[in-house]
Image (cartoon, rainbow, N blue to C red):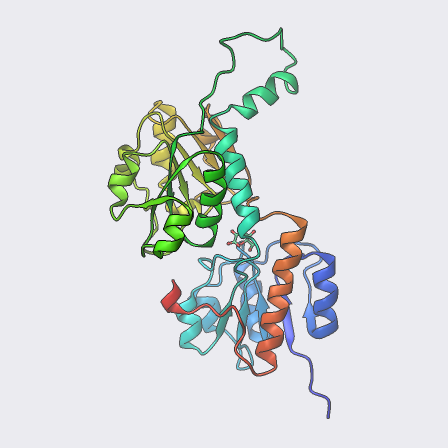
Length: 329
Ligand code: 8YV
């Protein structure tokens, strides 16, 4: 007798090519409207499905997981970060969690560089002069001056795949690479990147011209850049975050930007997405974008491929390639 297809609930609208393939392979329940599902809808989903495909906008907490039906066995996250999922609670119920690492590394690193250039070089100020208020009266030697990034010290917090991809790019832009990470990199990679390891985050922060965050959001990194640590950063330094908003105390950062205690910030992520502190929005010397780090058509298709491979492998009785283990977090 033909094996019935697993019921796969997808919480958000995915690229057509991904949805089409998922429909071919699984009994896929799509979200045509793309409206984020409520907690109650997520509970309904895990009660009836075999697999859930959530995204960063879904909170798969211990309550949702506790309601899972007997056949619910896999959370195949469409995304790299899994801070939206209570992995410990899932594992305790023998529910496997997978993610989509690797395929959004280069896109996120590109966006990081875009912010790292846009803030010191005042890209948005320049755009506004021509587009929003056509007030350009002509070139002047002392007008629209930003800061050079060539030759400056970049401090990377979190030197995993994305941190290293940023380091490679920044090196090509003439920056000196410094990093803080849970584990020191193998010597060969350190040498390739000509990078300096800082065991002490506090000491690194105090000496950098640009700081870029690339660590995951975990209980250990929540407000890693606390009000105290933010104060260690030089007044003429820039801060870039394409990782997770929760890693920075956003209110403290906003106060510092308003008081001129930091040269500027480029932020792709926020502490309470999709809400953004209105005072932060009003700051000068910031470039704020709405969680677009991995937002390329190619990247989203690749993420979908990864999700499909993880589900298919799991359903075929094998270990899916991108299992998330508690020891990784
Ligand atoms: C994705 C991300 O857009 O993968 C991640 O961790 O932050 C994003 O780039 C998002 O997670 C999709 O769920």
